[in-house]
Image (cartoon, rainbow, N blue to C red; front, top):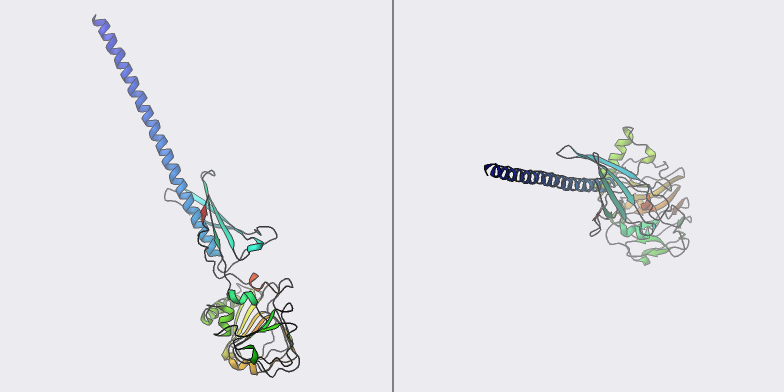
Length: 349
């Protein structure tokens, strides 16, 4: 009888031991699963935040840069590599940023950032955001981009200088005054119209919006310094703030690289001579510059005066800027200076 009781006790002990072992193994496995799930969730959160950082980096890159657009429904070409993100546990994440712009809505750019874990390529996340890039030009100005902007009236024009508006009926001359004070005289607008009361402030604000002259001077000075240091070619410079009083005889810009050439009041309204060719915006700060007379110049873009224009001679041609011959596109080549986010267009996937 004692032998039978001992056997039962032993059997029950073995059953209990087996049960405890199974429970222990199950608990251990469950703990490992929880650790793995927790680790995966942690890595998923990490890779998501890394993608967000890549998106912010890509948007900031647009300030002072612009992607190279190519033909296609998306016009996507440039891919940017963002800095590697390192997590506190030692994991690293690589980010790539792509830019997409549809031809029909070219004022908007889709910025997409994708992050991939270095340790496990299956751990990945992507986020995207639409932005609207800005150049230094006022968006309202870009809608019309007239060849001639006058903060005043027009009179006394001689010699048949030409202004080409791009197409008959386009605005050839925009003024802050009523159109009745524009006496074109011998000024040939080539089928263009006069837009009176186009702005109520200054020619500068009409063209550049909220960009101040101080801000522009800083941008021009930075580029000039980069050229002097050999970090930028003169042909790559976009912004010029001129205080020198010498006559201007240097060609600047091209059909794919417009510039902004601003003559400060300190330059004393220098004449252009030597048949110079300028692409972009030519701005005269001193209101007296409209009375100084000009030498020869071909301007493809806009000539702007902060005062009444009384002297413009036959050696001047001002053509509406165009990349393709249709009078559009000056903003297509100037660098972006910012890319505000479009609210409600952020997405992760």
